[in-house]
Image 1 (cartoon, rainbow, N blue to C red):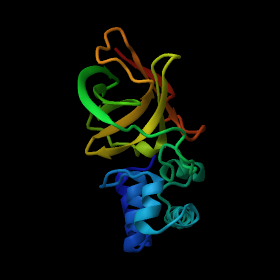
Image 2: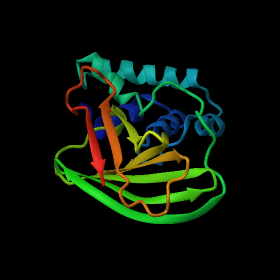
Image 3: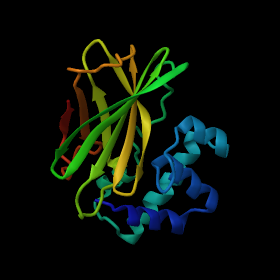
Image 4: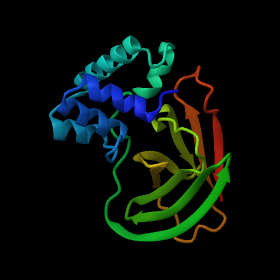
Length: 209
């Protein structure tokens, strides 16, 4: 497993300043994670250039031997969804209010908390915080796919996320809107390693209720 320090060292050595900013924005390294569409606009780049940059990082890491198992490199160069895909549905609009929730559960020294909702005219945004309550080295969150499931009548899609310190912030767009009073509603956060051969983080489903 690559540490954040190893990943930072690789991009600092083999990339120029603009390329560093692009990759850091894509993976949420020291900055807030950005959607690909926003990266394209800000840096005047495209998915082909980003893949070329990632390939150079791949070659650098292989050459310098951070991890001899090449299949693990894909975990570093993927941030939840590596392939560029347009947004599947309409973005939230017409903000109404915040709804505090704070439901949490701790499993294996990792705290998962649904902190609040943001209510919009056309849907809700569920905000989830993950915090490592351990002194062990952290994994790169880009190694993992996060999916939210509430119930069959609600559609959930990722709205991005970013890491900070020993934690992670995730948000999900939910349609139709959730009620302000969510007594009895359970949030199921599904975690799955992007690389099938990676067993360092087992596939699991976390229920927050």
